[in-house]
Image 1 (cartoon, helix red, strand yellow):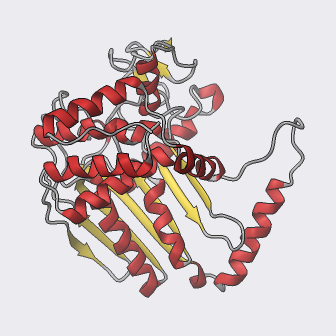
Image 2 (tube, rainbow, N blue to C red; image 1 turned 180 degrees about the vertical axis):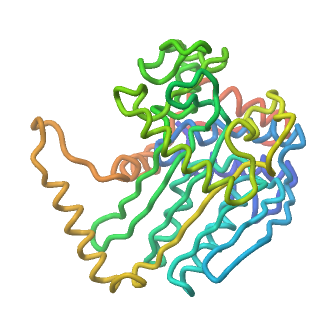
Length: 359
């Protein structure tokens, strides 16, 4: 087990060695470790070496000039100048929040960015302002739309954070695929198969081998197949792609840059880098915030009290599992798989910084 502080400090040192400013290294390390705290192990320090490889390949600019290139009172397009996605996303979400303070809502589409970690971290930034936060991003094309035998979409997550009063906030954060690619990476490290419905082979056949996507197969939209509603997952992923990239001028669909550095970029890009989309909605632009949050408490309590299918179960509110994981991991530490520990040790040696020490 490793402490949050130890892993965050290590990640920050690596980003500083890459040439990031103190502020950008702090922002990136904080956002990266938020995934580990919330139990999203696939998007935390396990991805640190992936960002390093993208930087070594010249695809991440450690000193970006992030700027607004088009705007209205309530909207903006942000160019991330190929910066680390966590830094670009943090900038863009703050723009959305400030616009919402003035106009009631703020909407920001982003181009020329990179992988930004977990979406929920950005949506949650709106909560302290009594705003509802939205965050989406397109991603490496690993997903076959319903009935397709080729990879055209990413896992394209959606996150929405809604404030309450005495109850904790409602925080939904989910991929638009049956499972995120990071879950496959964890299974690969454990040498385990995946459940049926996560993937298909290159010729469209169901598959459970966790290496299927690496071998030319594809992830499946939420639902898995048409009979179980995969057309809905496909539609959700498409919406994220359009809002994040077609709207901003980023690459979309199969043209999105892959996260892995050894996979070549598309020879005919249609935009600049990866795309994101952020929103902030001021609650009092709709009704008094105190009234809304009181009713959100009632909404949450109503669902928590729902009759369950068994005495051992309880209806959960989106965000409950992640909050529990955060409390436990701050108290007990963060467990890392042995391949991740080895990976971090190699980074420590490469950049001549002390490796994280286990508790």
